[in-house]
Length: 551
Image (cartoon, rainbow, N blue to C red; front, side, top):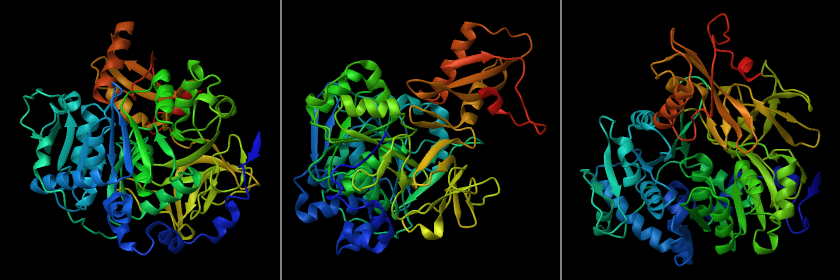
C-alpha cells in the first residue's frame, strides 16, 4: 500500500526542501532576529513566547488520574519556573550541574524542567518504573545535584547512600512526610523573575542514558544545538500546527517523551497534553475526545493495544484527529490500515535514537511517497547511508548498518557518549547499530539490531542489565536475556537461566526471579518468561550467543 500526502500543492516537495536545506535558514525560521534565544533552552521553549505576546496561550493541559484538569499558560510557566530556579540556586546548583525528577506526567515536572534550563543546568529524567540499581547508577554517574520526586516514588531512594538534595512534592492537603527533604511548595516564596543563563550551542541541556547490550547504560548529553533538529521533526514530520491539540503519549522519563512531548511542542509555542493515568484503552479514547486531540504521537504498542481493545472500532466520527505519528519500532501494514479506517487519519512511521533524535521519517508536512512498512526518508539536514560489515557503502536493496554521514549532516548534533563509554564513530560516519535496507526510491526499511537490544513496547532494553539483575538471585548460576516476539508489545523479555548445582527449577522460583528484576531494575524490563536450561551457548571466548537463544 502506498499513497502520497493529501494536497501536495499546499505543502513543499520533500526532495526540493531536502536539497535546499540550510542550517542558517532553519535558525532564522525558528528564532527570527533573536538568535541568542537558542543559547538557553528555557528562552527557546518559553521565555521568547511570553516576550512575543503568547503569554496567555495554554502551554500544558494536564489531566490527573481522577480526570481533574489543570492548565498552565506560558506566562504561568515562566513565573513558576523562575521561583524553582531561585530554589535550585539556593541549593548551590550552577550551570552545567544535573537536576533530576522522578515524577509522573505532572505540571510540576514541566516546571522543574524549565527551571533547570533557566539557570543553565542540565535536566536528567528518571523513569518512574526504575528500581534502586537503575536510579543509583544514574545519580552516581551524572553526579546529580538535586532530585525532585513525590511520596509515591520517594521510598525507591531509601537504600541509596549519599543522596543528592531531595525535594518532595506533596499535593494533598494535610499530608506530611517523615523525610527531611526540602518541600517543593517553598518555591512559592521566591521571586517570579529570573534572568536566563546563556550558554554555548554545544553545551548540554539534557542528560539521557541509553540502553546498551554490553555493560551499563551509556550517557547521552544532548546539546542546545539539538533544539533546531527537534523543531525540524515537530514541524515537518509531526506537522505540528499552531491550532493543534497535540498529545504525545510517550513517558517523558524517556527520550521520545522528553524530546517530543515537552521540548519540541514548547519550542514551537504549541499546547502539549499530559495524561497522568497509565495506558487504558477506554481512558485513552475518552482523553482524545475530551481534549479534541488533533495530532497524536505514540508507539506501535499503544496503537496495537487500541486495536485489540475493541474500544476504537469505527470511532473516526467521534474523534478530531488530523494526523497520527508512531516511533520506537516498525509499524506493520495491518495497524496502518486499521488507524486509517477506525481513527480516521493517516499514521506515519518515524525512526530515531536517544543519541540522535529523529533522523529518518515519513513527513506529514512534506510531499513524498509513503510506502507502508518503511521508516521513511532522511530528515532534512541528514545524509544517511547503509554500510556493510567492512563499513563500506552498499547498493540499494542490500541490508547493512544505518549510518549518518557527519560532514554532510548540518542538523546532526550527537558528538559522542558523555563519558566516552563507547566509540560510536568511524571516519565520517556515526554508526547507529541498526540494520536497514535502502530502496531505489530513497526510502529506508528497518530490519533489526546488529546487536541484542530488546525493544519492548517502544522501550529499548539492554539485555546485560536484565541478566545482571537475574544473577543476583541466590539460586542462579548464569543468565541470558533475549527478546521474543509479542503481538502487543513487539517483543517481551525471556530469561534463560542456569541454576546452581542441586537447585530445582519451580514455578515459585520463576516468580521470585521475575519480581526481583521488577523491583531492582524496572517494571518495564523484567522477564515475562523464564526458562531453566542446563547451559548457555557461548563463543570460544566465553561470550553468550544470544542469537542462538532467539532461534
